[in-house]
Image (cartoon, rainbow, N blue to C red):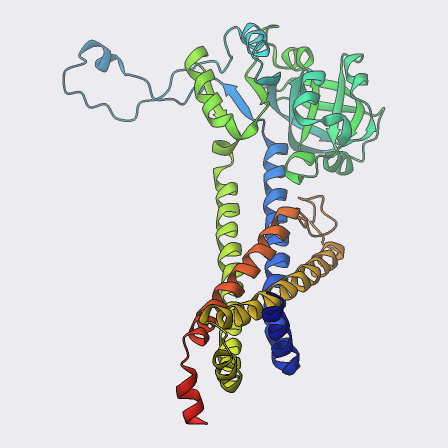
Length: 415
């Protein structure tokens, strides 16, 4: 084995430029793989985080748009009835026994938190201008369990909302539009024309302009009073579970148990997540192509090396080296090239990823993003080096096998 390794080393060092080109091919392939996968998975993770900010793992609500049987279908279920333009009846979107359902759900060990919510569209009065937005009536402590609001506060506190009957926590974008600060009074108007004076007790920033620019939080009782509803009027139950990946199956179980619509976060954000899947496919396709191209480069270089080493192969076999020994020499060369090239590729890829992470990026008013999101997950570095070594090993095995099967007599006759 030592002899095989020594001969392989001699062959590599005898043609340093050729060896360097082969290593650089692997280095470039692995480096680009690491850079691209770090960037694309970072973007996908950022997209997924945005969906988690915008929606709970599971949202339970009453679906008033769900198709229902008409009176003809109920009276003559076996008859042929054709009804056009059926209008839904004036039905409340209140969840029946919402607070009792919430208590039952909290007993489930797979559920981390259940936050009741009542949302209303409102107008924020800003002098002669009325800004459109929404106010969410919540149990602020339960809401914090789901969305970690306490870490998103820019001013004020969540606990201040609990001690202020007309308190309001507004988004940072909305606060900027209204020139509002903690302690200021705001006048809200509902679509029904009811006006209410609210006191700003906090300012939050989730990092998503679609929320920060329009949403505010208040106590459930305050919003119920604003809408003229009773104390049990709840339209949504937001649910957080221990494993958010299992949200779809859990939502189906909750819906069958309580009879209300339960929508998981993936279904609610299907369009957004579809883009992430497409980016994943593109990332892996391009990355694997780079590695395969690097493998073909190794194959061509080793193939040429074998033809240039015909005399050496003839001498080795004539002096007693078996076919497997000759194969081992050239396969060892490809593994050395692959290993060193892959390690250098990891360093290059990490360096490029680090540079990308420092590039300033303006997310505009919609996204709170100062730089590109880069994922430095070690598993992609492991995948890179394993794939790099395997690719070069396969690329080197074919010409190595050919070298082992060469007849030394024919080579000597041709000299």
